[in-house]
Length: 158
Image 1: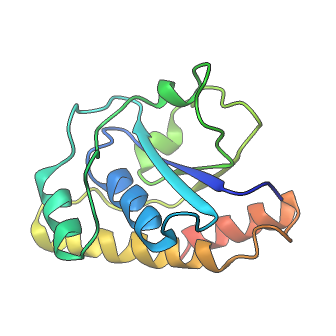
Image 2 (image 1 turned 60 degrees about the horizontal axis):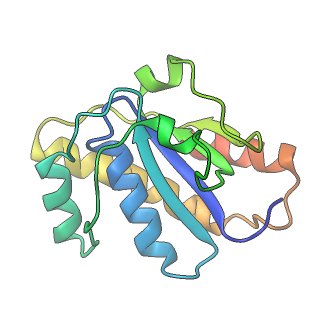
């Protein structure tokens, strides 16, 4: 489907919790040079990651250095890293008109309820981690565009 690394952009309105957790989890599990790399952004970034999201990631042993809440416009600007897959993780972001991303990335929706309590953050993390793990299991290099689109859509239903 694409050249390595395969880049995923996780989007959420505020880019403070769910998208940050998905980005950090994928990058942690893929490791350096793992063939996958994640980014996150939001349509109306809150300016900083949610402290509960950062605390949960720390407990899970996932690094959060450099985590920041940023605009999705950064990824459509000149010099932005290539994005192969855009995944919305909140229903509001899924309904918004995304900017144009060069290369016509695939798009999928993996909706996760907005967490507010520590228990809800844990549940959101578990859902996102399970979906990220499934993405990592896909034979990205051997699937054609339609096949990959179908598989990433299926992951969002898990």
